Length: 352
Image (cartoon, rainbow, N blue to C red; front, side):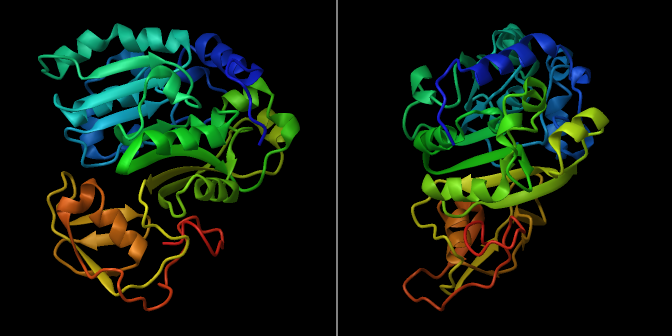
C-alpha cells in the first residue's frame, strides 16, 4: 500500500465527512458504522447509560471493543470521535486508570472535550482520568505517546479509514507495553477493494472502500511482529442502500472484533508443548467462564489443553492473575490442532 502523508486528500475528505457532513448517527447512508447497544456486555451498557446524549448521538462505531480487566489500566482509543467509547473506558478503568482519546477532526474533539467535567462528576471522581489529543493515528509519536506506555489500545471502526494502515499497526505495537493488548472492531472485506473506489468520499467515509481484506490484515500483522491474532466476534454487514451496493460491487463485508497481544513468544502456527490452562475466575462479568476468542471458552476450574500461543496470551498478559498455566516450552509435541480464527482456510497466522 502506498504511504500517504498526513493531511493527505484522504484525511481531508474524512475530516469533512465526519466534521461537517455527519452531525448525527442518523446521517449515515449505510449501516456499516452502526452498533446494536443491546449486544454489548452488561457492564458496558451500564456505563453507556451515564454518557451524555450529545456524545452518543454522534457515534459511528461498528462494534463494542471494550475488553475486560480494565481497572487501573492506561487505555488508548484511536479515532475516538466524540468520545463515546473513551468515556465508557474512563468509567471502567476507574479513577486510578487513564484514558487517552486520539482523533484528527476538530468538530469531534470539541464535543468530546466539552463534556469532560460532566463525566468526571457523573462517575464520582475527584479528578479527571481522561484526555483528548488531536493527531493522526499513523503518527502517535507526534502527539507524545511514548514507547511501551499503554496497556491496551482500542479502536472502533476507524483503522479501515486510514490511508496508511502499516503505519497504524507499527505505531500500535510501538506504544503497547510488553504483554499489552490491541482490541478493536472494524469492517473487513472478503476481497481487495478496487483502487478506484478508495478515493470516493462517501464509500470511504461509510467504512467500505477502506475495509481491509482479511488475509492482507493477517499478513500485515505478521510483518509488524504479531504472527497470531484472535477473532472474538463477527457479524455480517448489510449495506441497505441500493445505490451504494451497486457501486461497491460484489464484495461482502463483516464487522469483526479482534484481539492481538504484544508478545515475543508467539509463533505463526499453533504448536503443542503439552500445556494446560485453568481459569480461576475473578474477572468481572465472567463468573462461570471466560472467552479468549470465538472458540476458546475456559470454564471456571476446568483445565484445558492449549497451544503455546494461547498459553502465552493467558500467562504473560494482564489476564495472568486469573489463570493457572501448567507446563512450559521445553518439550515440543508437534503442531496443535486448532481452527483458524479468521475462518478463511489460512494455514498460518490467526491459527488458534
